[in-house]
Length: 204
Image (tube, rainbow, N blue to C red; front, side, top):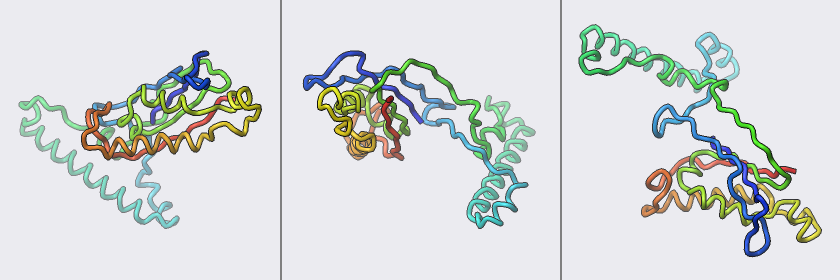
């Protein structure tokens, strides 16, 4: 997931609202291009009986299939190594940590610290948003939102603030529309149909 904190820094839009820009932008964590970290704690075989007792038969079948595929890959790589194929081709053998049966552990997450102010907007979103929308487009879209503090100053009523759910919906619609455009030029180089999720909230 991508995280961003957007603040006005004292600037405003033509209609008097806050013009938001990045205060903090997290960096995507990837093993390689288009292969993002997958944070997960994959159940080990010793946990499968308990999962079955909970009725998680489908999950256990998937885990067994994945483990079988992992072992088959390891056997093929070991056989190829013995024949010297991998060595002559200059290819490194795989390991169980990148086989798909092991997820990236939470402790590998990058951490950030920054100052925030009342009215700043915090956005967490999947790469379905950032692969389809440029940063300046996200900033422009979020600048249309009115925070509770801005609503109180402008209208004397905090309840006239833009609901965070409406901001999330706007980001979803914009990213989805772009992902369906075959002529789109995006940060991903072309349209990217993908899962689009986000959470938004104000600093109060």
